Picture (cartoon, helix red, strand yellow):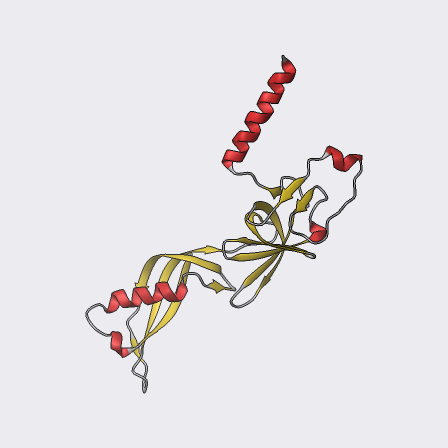
Length: 193
């Protein structure tokens, strides 16, 4: 995505390495920040143009207009993303997907998913619950969720998510998937012989 930014540079940086200093200041000012309009700026990939510096009268600073390209992360409502559980409490779960903080209310978590560390647990048991496999999710586990709401401020983005949909919940790592597949294959072989 092509973006623009203004940089103010102190006169002590004027010299033979001025352009490198302007680029370094752009990277330090922009990367890792959040713009309400464009989302999280992950990385500057290319600097397309550095304008001629304009001297600010009475201050000595020089202002540079820079046009650059960047990788941005702009979540949207309805998007399905993977996140890491960072906190579990009575009202729900907090997770992070890179720089995005996501809250999942306990009312948006299905009955077959239990979060270890939560103060309140659902102790309802019936035949339908016993048929479904219960997933236990702990801190630092990876989950797949759907974003159902966003709040975009000038310098931050906050999200609300849900696990109440097909294929959402705890995601297994590749090694765990292989172990599960081998276990199921062995059980099938036992029953067939």
